[in-house]
Length: 290
Image (cartoon, rainbow, N blue to C red; front, top):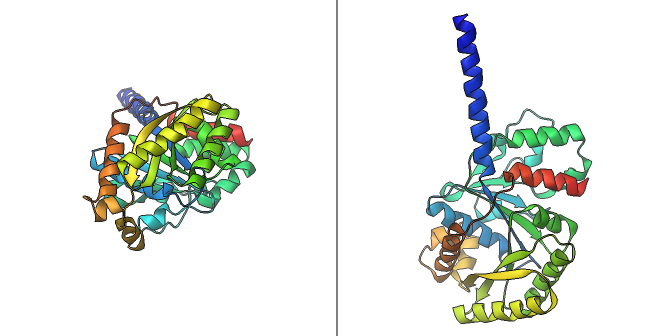
């Protein structure tokens, strides 16, 4: 009888731990970072934002969701053996997929594995969602999508809790960022977004670029945008990419590093409503792709 009671207590304790772990996962803030075109420094921003958040005591996971063109691993100088979809139909655990990268930041490669989403059976989807339950506790999960206006990017925009769009002062970048927002607005995927202006020569140019963009959005779209900040153009970024080490680590006091840290502080000070953590994101993605 005592043995049975002890077994029951152990089962209850284990179940309580599982519930607690699931609740902890659900508290993670999911932020999708995207851009209207390639070459604006989106992935570089994601990697360095993650490091700045980590330096501020936050536990951060990057989910590299750039289909076929993911390069967060390259920027961080790591070389993944698997992508997240390798956990389907195998004995691999999620912890074997996650890479511990720079400054305590974790990375999950996805890349071309996202092509498999539409091919998954219901049983495989269920297994995938269950294995995501193995994900540890994180404060922020940054979803680094591809660039442009396509179904993959819009799907992650729709499934996320917070949307950050990266642009530069170049007219082509602004035009493509507007096209992305127009599609997001047209399909009612999000009601608001935050804007980061990269490669600005001065902070004044960054703010002027945002104001010009905001004026067009207010005139033609129903979405609301807000200014998260700018990142000053800095030659040290080129050097850091060549060395495959994030510039916030290699040159922590350069202008670009200070700019990203300011943005990280703004994000920490904001309330982002969690809607089910990373499992919630993939449940919504599966619904979109099915």
